[in-house]
Image (cartoon, rainbow, N blue to C red; front, top):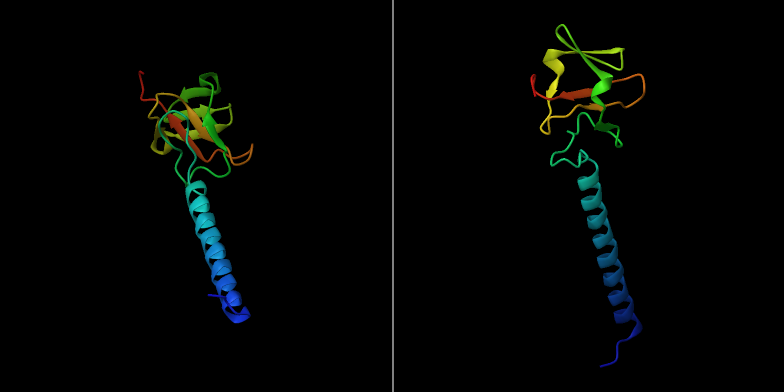
Amino acid sequence: MIMDWREALAAAGRLVYFIVTAAIIAGIIVFATSAGAHDTGKGWAYPRECCHDQDCAEINPERVKPVSGGYLVDGKFHVPQAEVRHSPDGRFHACFPTPEVLKCFWAPPPGS
């Protein structure tokens, strides 16, 4: 059977619709999986409310000083104990959206 131009045009329109729909769905899936937290590489991920654009990372313990009621990070950021998050891998981690802002901080349990 030979298609006339109207049938060919309709088939091409369906193909374009399918391709555009598949691309939109693929884009949504990629965005949904990358818009959230990023992996620490240690078997857990930084939560979405802390991490934006890969600004969270493990930090050297020498940057952290325990002080009364919490921690002092980089000699200028005081993190009250109530805001310290438990570090699942037993290491210090911090999120710095800018060099002047410490958004989230993780510490190992005391004595570990």
